[in-house]
Length: 111
Image (cartoon, rainbow, N blue to C red; front, side):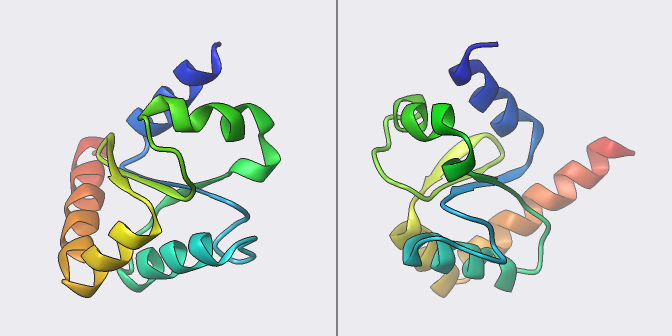
């Protein structure tokens, strides 16, 4: 499977995906850490992909949605943005609303 297809599959199959450096428990950069903390504060389950462990994704993710930096947050298959946008949405209370809607939509489709 082509790496862009693999990324597309990850984004399609998971309601909330954070592509980051490291993991939420052990982030490897400040931007990834802040984005993961914002999602964790929303108290919803999310999937993360440690781009440092997958050089193909690290090299090709910027081409997937034409977004050059990391982290990248996807909700319901749509690129939300990087750290700054994620934090802005969190501070306005919008991230929690978006994340809860995506999580509940996923729970409904799993039943």
